[in-house]
Image (cartoon, rainbow, N blue to C red; front, side):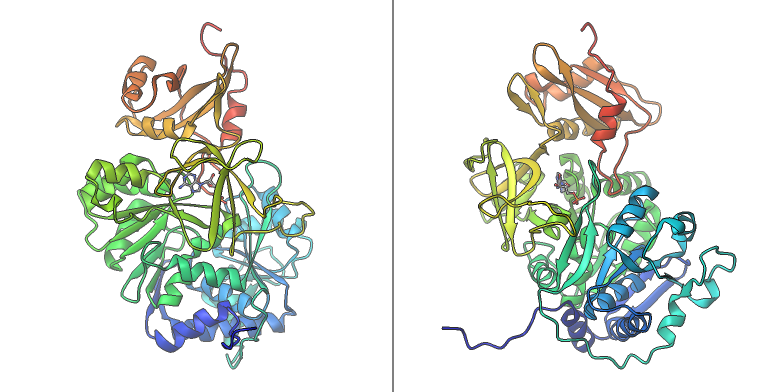
Length: 542
Ligand code: AMP
């Protein structure tokens, strides 16, 4: 027997419809690419998203077609998300920080029909245009006054002209909720990038869960700043959450320097924000130097890479900001786990709470997680047993876009490529990417734990650990450091510092300093490149 409830497909267009009707005057503020601060509202944005859909239809975009973006977080980018997804097309966010060859590969693999680009990326697109096979129209996301007059992009369209030509009288189609609406390629540290194709249903369910008080914790009174770019795994769903709840949405455009970030946090009275650890490293440093505070900010979500404990402590102790350490991935839309306390862990003293918050948090409803050994046997949740982390659920990918590759096991789980422990309270801790874990004498050493311990040293700016071949132990850790300006450290001093934080047998066999460490386009340490740089390295005396 079927239930007797209404059929109300979970469509992304319903988010913006709801915001326009019930939070219509709530602001969307952008520190824009052109420079000025731009202010609009959900009701205006809804009309413009409809106009965008009309403009795309006029350009020949049909249901299922991909509309690519090379863009920062701006109100226009949000309009494209809702406009393209709402009409049944697919908003494909391309990461502009990738190498040009990867961008060419991604745009061609996705067969983007239209490409919408910020002014910043005009030179990039000019350089690769000849290789973009199926793109029929390039839209520059600006107004007539800022349109470049000397671009070599033939027939470049002006976004504001396209919008102005439409009347906005448009009904979103009543789509099947499983219709695709978003596409995002994984950053691909190995092999070609792979496309994750989100559906209306998966995005809406993800939004509903991500808003909750034990996740991002966003309500109508909040002002939300997703510093995480919209091209990084759906901007972690944060713009959708703001829309659904009617929170003020603050967008930083191309601005990432700590002073501007602080000005935005202060002037817009931001209460909730989210970004990768590198952003917070520079902001915290700026705050310490300038003596500035964060009076409005309540919560910060940190994910994408492991948040060092020292960073979490700084936020909590010095700025009275709650840190939610989260783990996820593009294939999970991206949320998998987030570090809200349980009734029991909230009662712990500061140190105890920091121990818990340094882990990547507990799984949210909508995702199933398990850890398995190399034979696929599930491992206990005792906080000690390591295993390959696997996921399945309502917003987990079941295959990649246009790739003939089975990615689920017999139980329907997707292997995340991460190695983790899960403790009896359900807190998961990432110890490594499977391919980064250091195998020393049959035991595993967590490169992430070592890196986090090393960056707690005040003279260390950044740390990366890789496994180097060792004749006796198979692999041993090499610690690669970027030091603060003018500082140096010896191996013995570093190891003495680390010995208070990690097991003795984990201590690196050598410590080297470099001017900088390579990063991926989403800000993670690029271990593949680092390993290549050190491929001829041998430990002293071997
Ligand atoms: P991406 O799809 O580019 O967001 O990358 C996902 C990967 O980032 C995960 O599989 C993890 O390896 C890593 N990651 C994400 N969040 C965290 C975190 N909080 N701690 C450690 N690694 C993380």
